[in-house]
Amino acid sequence: MLNSITTSLLLASAVFAQSSTVSYPEDVIATGTMGTTNPPEPTTGTAINQTSDARLLSINAIDDWCIFAPPELQDIADSETYEVAWCTQSRNDARVIPDGTITGVSLLKTDMYVQIMGYGNLTQLNIPAGDWGGELDPHGAYGSGNPIGGNVTTNITADGQTINVAEWMLYVSYEMFCFRACTWSNETYGAAAIVLLTGFSPTDELDEMGCQFVMPGNYDFNGTFETCEADVAYPPGWYVEGVSGDTTSFSSFAQYWTGVVDGVTYTAGDTVTPSTVQSTPSSSNCQTVPTISNGIALASLGVSGSDSGSASATGSAATAGATGSSGSSSGSSGSSSASSGSSNGAVVARPGIQAGLSEGITLVSMLAAVAAIGIFH
Image (cartoon, rainbow, N blue to C red):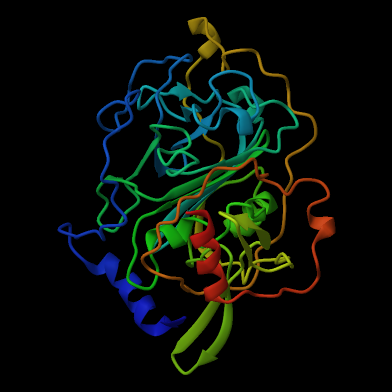
């Protein structure tokens, strides 16, 4: 598949030159309704309720964001359909993340998505110590989201207005999380491609390679609270195949699968898992704050951070990979909306996963990827 990098970069950059009458691409804005447990719109200053079942996340600032976590002590993989919102501020009728839980945050603002990564003792959010976590998105195994009824909003947009995000992905474990929400797209870079492992077979394990693979960036920030501008990353799992003039061709990885469906034997995909991303996008103009705090004394209100007394984390948060080389915007199919059934993939690669990876990267053609989709959908 051929893409024009020059044209696409101009389209992405032009977004921020438009007025407040920006017309957002259709695949960027969610068209469904708020989940039944959620307020009708993102709201600040809502009552503190550490047993809330609300599932509305917002990403607005270094000290104003939310993630999903279990309502009670339970592995992410077992609670992904009914996890609840935990926010740094009292907002969205959600549970409040206790002060001191988060030890480092990096908020990245790009032309096409907002991305936030963080470290901390997330056992305070009912994630068991040692749980390497899982992946959540608006699709899920049942097509109604993981968690079901989960919604995401952000005001880090082309014109500063709050939008209901159609495509997003969140990886969370007991000590780390990464979260990306698409805020712009074009015919080259579709919203689903920007945030999901689009075109992959449901049997792939690329999400188990963790945040650094699916949402690359500088993860050496634990102990720092920063807001940065950043280049747009290549869509997850996409690799440069060739460059000719102003056009670049890309190919995507598809997990190898062979089996029988309705009496017919199918084989699709590649036998070698990629060992790294195409490139790590650079960040700049970083602004730091000493820490983040909501100032809410939960103990004085007779409530704790978690609903069921989570155990303390064991071991320190992993700080993977320094900032890599600059990666410019790059592309995939602009119209993909493949559902991504949330798996129990790790935020940090599970022990043993990386050790088994081949040094080489063998890429599958787009035809094979499409074939893989056809088998399962």
